[in-house]
Image (cartoon, rainbow, N blue to C red; front, side):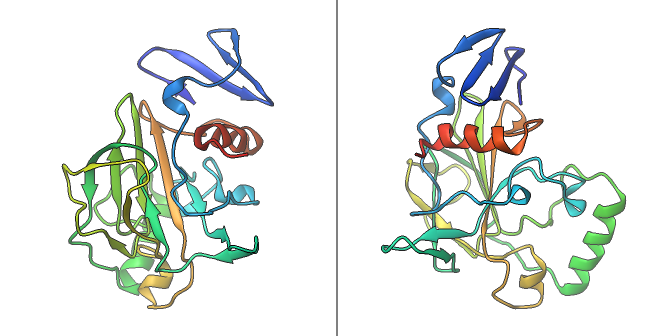
Length: 219
């Protein structure tokens, strides 16, 4: 991805990080130390769930990380449920909270799907992100939590949140499953934006995985 404000280019390749043609031993401090948004959650194994993956319904590209599984106390993989809490990845200020969200009907979902497959879309009031919360972490970093089933009662625009604070619960809002009133497609779509670019833009899946491991301090 590109850091626009400073015109610096950051490239992840294996364990080498290049910044202005100089080798670094790690990432800038503002891109490390964040809290993973799902308790015992795990990064997906498939490339399709990462930023940069092709998406017909998202104007050709996926801009977030889809988290759908966690490890139970015995180390077994389990799928998230609508009761699974979502945690803020860092301190910040809430800049969007869809407290008045209304689910799409199946007809609305199909109409928006058809439109997005034929037209470039940058922002619409009702999209596949469903019920959302956005947090500005300052230093050019912002996080967006999509498909939420509910938002915590203390969360509203202007609220100050702390790293690791529960901001709501996982769901399938904005997706076809919600329009059909089923419990399928439950997951958290997390977008991380740095200086106006989504984290992982123009990177290969292997590089994005490595970058996210640094970002969240994962083993």
